Image 1 (cartoon, helix red, strand yellow):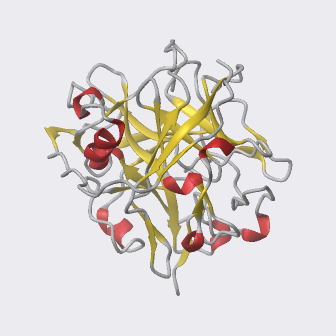
Image 2 (cartoon, helix red, strand yellow):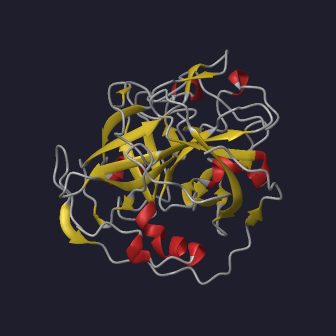
Length: 331
């Protein structure tokens, strides 16, 4: 049987939400099989919106008081689900909400600049996304609180069956275009490399540029969750960022790929891109990294050794877009 591919930006086009920037959809409208997060549980979570119609395609994570991390796919106009012809959405046509994960009024920030990874690309018939990561510079510095705070990046070595938490705030009702009032969280495990490689030819292992988590018992990320954080706990029981929700891959028909049988959730491995993040923000990478360098994992132990930091990308970034909108945002 031929393999079916769902980037959550390609499949289920018959169910796509119509908006100025048509973002594809899927039959399952949010984190599947998850539960409501507690207040302040994921203070680094933020959601991206389009100004034109308040459509919300994706989430992301606050990694400093002015830099927000998400995936490039989230910030592209993918038309009718065609990732190969996608173009960047102007920075001044989007904004980021922080601190509204549990139904409270969010703090709204404009976007001053977007930096896409210069080697982001869509490859092959399966439309594999490579280097799916992007930086957003907010239009003003964030005042950090218990409900809005930055997250450090985990730099430890990952192993199969390590338990990870995924957070997302996708749609509650697909056709009414309404979103969850409360951020959803779900726990998944790092899957065997052979399982992921059978679906994603370029997959290496969980310490490469991509991490695969298995969709277990109908649990996983879906539409509206892309770009959002995958995180674990360090030795001090603090959340540390591991990955960004990128794609869903499945051998099942496209309409059932979200958390479907045989599917895997793929995540951009944030630490793999730490030199790129440091280079483009101008902030030393040590300021982003978790200083404990080991995890107090909730159900399984991650190896205490740290993986070698990837080499910096020497290519000059070319995919930066700055906002021409100088209107102040609410805070």
